[in-house]
Image 1: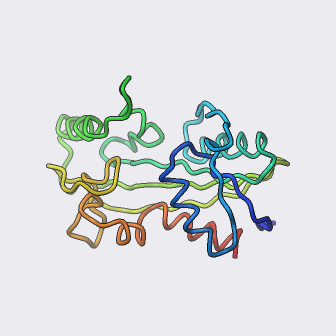
Image 2: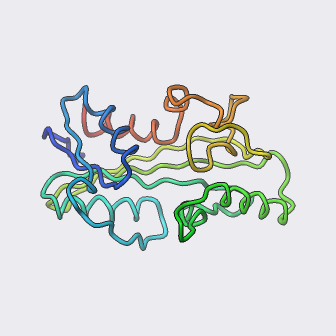
Length: 203
């Protein structure tokens, strides 16, 4: 039996201000106030699972348990067919440097690996997002969204973040890096996961 969200306050299990703003905007029309795990001074749990759902559950349950409020977490990344689904859950790790995340470096690494593998064109890839809504009593619900496309090189556009300048969604001539946020947010993996979660637990 699917559990519905019935409160008016929700923790977004993130320390990313942009992600908090994104979810706040989506949930405000429903009369829900969002607060981030960072704002509550909660730590970031170690993500030790090998799936988006597993890591989403770690983050959502940690925030729900620590705050005593329902918590929403998302885990997302890029999967590349010719790289057997990599980088997948390790998408952010591929961009890791001691000075912070460097996605230009991560995109160059991905392109290099595709070239070394002799991957044929088009180089199919998917952005994937899994959302997990957890309650303090340990119950959770989840929803998944994906956006299909191909990787292009050289990368194009300065909008968005992460792998956006390298990803061209199906049906469009532009990369995510060339789209404005409003256009991207109607077709993105996160938008699709959010729509499913809203239908499942909030409306």
